[in-house]
Image (spheres, rainbow, N blue to C red):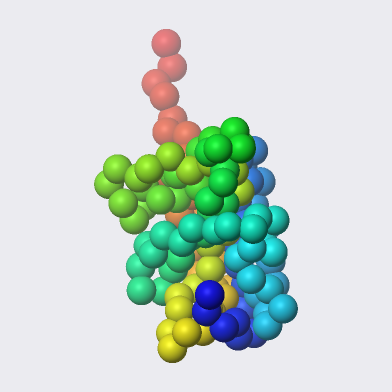
Length: 123
């Protein structure tokens, strides 16, 4: 597992659609942020990683449609996501970075921009 640096934030996405901004510091790791022993990382860009609970499917945790919607911005056909998802910055030299405030806001904006209601004609 990479060493951790105090560098910003992580975005926690719940299956219910709740978003939480987590402080990302030297005492935080993906396992703590997810409340899981075994985690899986998915590199989305060179500066963005999504972390999920490796045991989410075997434990029957609910599907996480909001996290999957975020994945669609980076992958054409993303795999289903179950349980909580946490988004962090990249790794470099064995260190795991948090997200900047701008990166975090961009993720939330990307999610909501994909879900804006398009006005429908009146009948």
